Image (tube, rainbow, N blue to C red; front, top):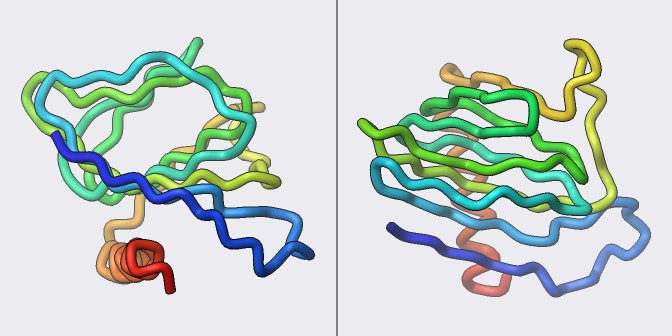
Amino acid sequence: MAHEFYQVTEKKYDSIPFKLLYITRSAYDKGWNSITHTHHFTELFYIVNGKGSFILTSHEIPVQKSDLVVINPNVEHTEQSNPQDSLEYIALGIEGISFSLTEGDNPYGLFTYKDDEADILHHLDILLLEIKEKN
């Protein structure tokens, strides 16, 4: 199990209506699960490796490598790896935004970006490096 958490404290852009609160890179072993929780902000999870699920009150969302999961504010959820696979993801906590997701009135979104995986990981890794080095 590995978990890197970087909180963003710099406030250079107060005029922007949204704010990146944190970025985290987490890797969990087979059969791991988090506890159910909510946030006042949106979370974006990009699945780097493995398989697992996001569990909401009324949905279980299976995820795998290259999936992007959007969890809007105040949505009860938890993450878990499945018994056969570990789960690694990069998560962003962003305050001041929520997404209108097209299917019904879902409080979450699931998108797959297999063709763009290298570009997405490149940009997320740069963001992680900038925050680690306080650039």
